[in-house]
Length: 112
Length: 109
Image 1 (cartoon, rainbow over the protein chains, first blue to last red):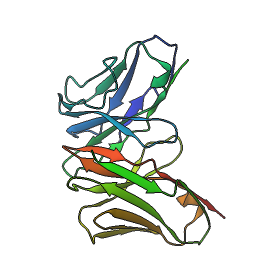
Image 2 (tube, each protein chain N blue to C red):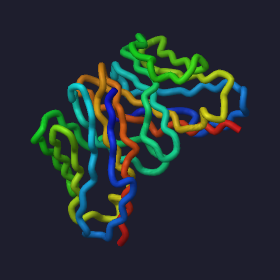
Image 3 (cartoon, rainbow over the protein chains, first blue to last red):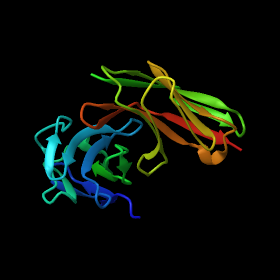
């Protein structure tokens, strides 16, 4: 079946612009996660949804970062007033009862 | 706070030269240790989950083992297609994963 998909795959934004990153999880997966991966580092947790409820947003680095999953399927990660330090790969993952997290290919964000 | 440390940072092997990658962890109560493989430009791909000391899992040339403080990923007779970054993670709290920085493996023909 289809895996986790993310769009766009690449995004270049000028400093100060707002961006929106989309994640389509595996159909039927209740849990959805966002991670940020800097170059040469492991993914770092940003936020977690169970269905439409955002149960953990402790990893969001500032109030410029906002995530939503209004109907319990597709999720959007929004970054307002982007800064250079926001440049990274943003990974989305979904999971079901076996707790394995299945990752999408990521969106590479470059802030110039 | 849970911590994960992986070593070495990078490893170069000749095809057929077996070796092991290390993952040391500090957790208040292990709820699962995960190994992932990540190829350049792609998201992490799930390999194994281990839950208790003494547990072992195998898949093709890979075997993962777990003790109370560390996990090893053993690679037997590696091939060039095994070249990738291998990530270790522990589950913290509800479901989120805490990752190490990974080991970049390069297998030369």
